[in-house]
Length: 509
Image (cartoon, rainbow, N blue to C red):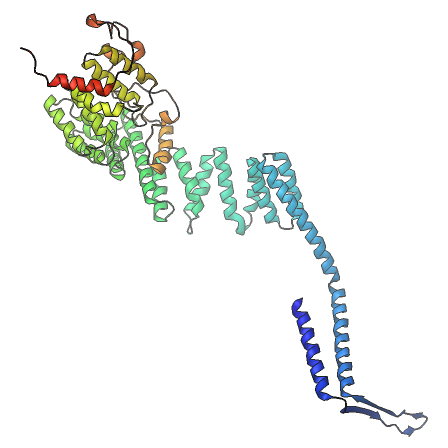
């Protein structure tokens, strides 16, 4: 608007300048001389105008012409403007209906959301936009059936087919229709121009369906396309390979022996893929041990211990040399500890080695720093074993009772020394693909789910009892004439110093 005002002002200023320049003298004469002709005679006409008057009249004529043209244009556009006004009001009502539909969906009011979405569709002239709003509103309200109806309608248009397939995959995943997810997402993922959104639902559907090998293939393609970072992909692949190897191993128990090479390759491949994934190392070690390849199995464990020690690896390592002499066993344990001497698990392994050879003073001296602050149930069991070896049955009982309420260790809570270190179900593997794969943290799925735990290995229970609740007074505190002592925790450091001092004193002859 301002530019038009400026233009008029400039024009008026220019006109004023011209009028001043011309002055009053110059003028324009207009005349017409007529002659008699028959019965008619033309009137003589003569007029004289100044230049100023001519310019003013010409200006007024042009302005009048512009006003007249503008009026005609306004009349011509009036019906369109009337329709536009109606459209704007209709659009405002449609926006209000969309807002109300989305808010109702967010509140979970499916019926109200459906009504408002229908109202918005009736006000919106675009069927595509109407279906999009309807689908999003239905999804927000949790009405997956209604959302699927809208997405099916969107599949008929090439422009919206991709977003419709994505929405239908979400609905199928919500319904648990894994076959439909695999079909739709697989088609989108494997097309000439792959859809990036299809990776996650396709991978999850394969995992949920227990298709370990197919999920691994999808993961490999995603890595090549840059859809997932290499470290999470590496850990996920290790879990998938281990799960597939375990599946084949269980087939072996049923008499199938034609997949041994594949099972071995998967287990060792998983161990090399992620040396910090203890279940892969344990399974590979088990397979190699059964095939009498102890040396390769021990190297595999030592490599894994150097990167990420785990108690299950220590158990597997000891099992490799269970028929060896005590001296050989001690040598092997020392070799394993040397791979990562400063790690907590290496210290615990030293404690167990000292207790195994009857050096309870050394075992307690190594254990004391670990149990000084918030000891776990596993450490309480080792403390009870050390106290029993030091002829302190009341203290042993105290540690066992304390271990009942002590916290569990995530990587120790569900090991079964008499069987598989990681006796995972299909559901357990499914959880590990994401919990370990994405974070690198190994927590047994049963511990994560709060399920009952198995008996702790190395509990050092006395008289063959399974836990502290099964220990009788005769088992501890009253055997060999000892009286039961009050269960008061002593100063561990002071008592350790006394024990060490006693050990240094020469025995009387």
